Length: 411
Ligand SMILES: Cc1cc2nc3c(=O)[nH]c(=O)nc-3n(C[C@H](O)[C@H](O)[C@H](O)COP(=O)(O)OP(=O)(O)OC[C@H]3O[C@@H](n4cnc5c(N)ncnc54)[C@H](O)[C@@H]3O)c2cc1C
Image (cartoon, rainbow, N blue to C red; front, side, top):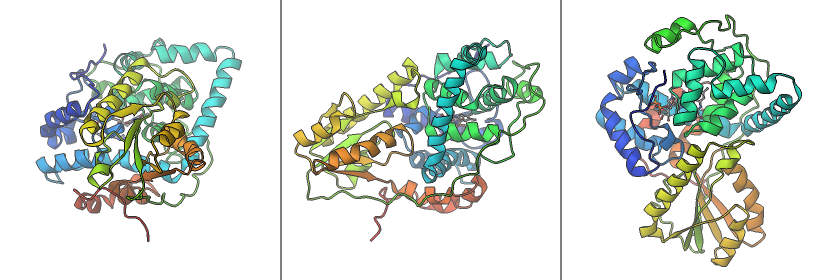
């Protein structure tokens, strides 16, 4: 039995705000008591992640809305969950080598699929939901059909993938990135690592049939799950690098605004005084995986980019959808720009594209200016250890809302 969604994931800011408004009454006590139940229609969670992942609404906006309705104590659980996303983003931002290592591990796992007899069939069966494991197969099919899974289902799925099916964890993380509408380098990679015992070294997550039965309303009680979940071996965490330096555009030089799928609320730049002479839109959804990304994921992101362009048009003029990243320097030159300004893209495919584009732009005398949001600048530096250490900074983060949303530029 699959768990259909009660709401459509329409890729617009209007739909995100409507979803947020509809969920607000449940963000207090109901969420605290029932968020872990994975029930048909997902009545106890927000379903906001596809929009928040792309910053169609930001974490800060969601927090402000929730705290406008509930006291910090009543909304504590929901606030913490929203800030898990912020924490994971900060953690990976400070350790980009963990993303690079995941991509290298995925390439090795795909080589193994090609070389090891039987592995390709076992992997395919897991992806298709044809393993015969109750629950797991339904979640795989739900994921393909809806682009969404409840958090608890993600945990059980990842645990069964790693410890019962004994498949490489990177292949599971890749399946999620290809199929989740909210597929996110930080939340996904680090959550899979957490289940595997790589993120909190030695601590794994073992899927338990009684727990599954309890939190699925008795729909599933899989048999034959691994009784042990020994942690996978991995290198120690790299030391955190310094926070990225905040950058600011030159108000005297012609600027273009570049919109990507990692921040689809670039209005904060206009509010801070950016007056772009031209606007371009680029994305790298295909870069989430070396394999084909699901059509639903591509459609959601394309729709969300078009919605952002339409919202910007009255203030910033019509946006140009560039065919690919190689077109960026030509576009900027043709428009007579001296700088291309874009919201900071956290570690992942878009950030890698920006990194690669910077020298090509510089060769034409055009600066790439990546603007960090104030909320990220305040939160990410605290993602140096575990979430419990990060949690201590939550009151100060909440006290800074609403706040001017540009990171201060160091003198
Ligand atoms: C193995 C695994 C893989 C995951 N992969 C992704 C991913 O690719 N993209 C992604 O956005 N999330 C991922 N998550 C985190 C989490 O499962 C989803 O963010 C959450 O289920 C989204 O559903 P919701 O919006 O209904 O959540 P709600 O419970 O309503 O939570 C509200 C918001 O808080 C944030 N949030 C909640 N739980 C988490 C969490 N555990 N980690 C980070 N943020 C959280 C999300 O922004 C979410 O929209 C993964 C979790 C696991 C265990």
